[in-house]
Length: 49
Length: 254
Image (tube, rainbow over all chains, first blue to last red):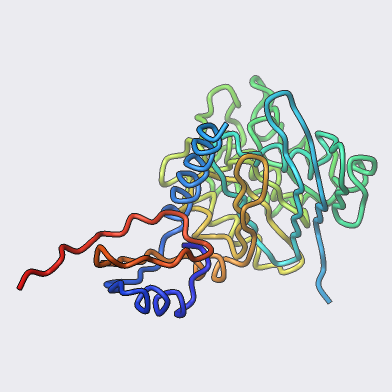
């Protein structure tokens, strides 16, 4: 996720999830995550049409 | 007061199958900005517009206080551009290119050029046609740096270089920025390079800027969370979550 604050983990825990780990990401991982999310979004747009 | 070297505001440029839109970008003195994005994201188009090589349809570009592309001749006296597009004469030597650039730019620093020639392991008598790709990039960098420009713009400077040549190129770029009046804008899809030398990152995708901030803020905002959720848990939809593959725990049996 790209808007991390400690409150995010707390919100998941309040919803009943267990937060096992919170890791920093390298720029390479951020790059790939962004591009994959963008492709997924495009794919969803295509399906919606 | 900050010393703004480059400013793009609301820049737009359309091609048949691609549109660059709403590009806002600022490069201050002392900054190294890495422009990151996948192939075809718009990095090179952004750089070409910043350099006045392509005219934007909408928005404004100011380079060293000059309006681009109208005042590009004046602006470029203090700006150097390194890209595959920049031509070298195959039959001319490294030394010929150095003398040629020196004759055009009064700011040429001959002693620095000589030192760079040694550091980058180039030889003045070498002909361009005999240089490897890495050596050509190093020559382009030498010709750009020895002019002592205030703004250095590089389009994929380390693409196709071996690790040693990459290290040499990045080390020279790092030394440039020791002079805080200068700034570097460079595009790359090599994230290691960007992470190593940038202090500012702009991520561009599908013709638009996704994020732009200083490196620490950029990297600090991103986290990977490992969650285990009971099947009954409805996870909140939080802003900024780009992939939610939560591992669902099995219900415990008595």
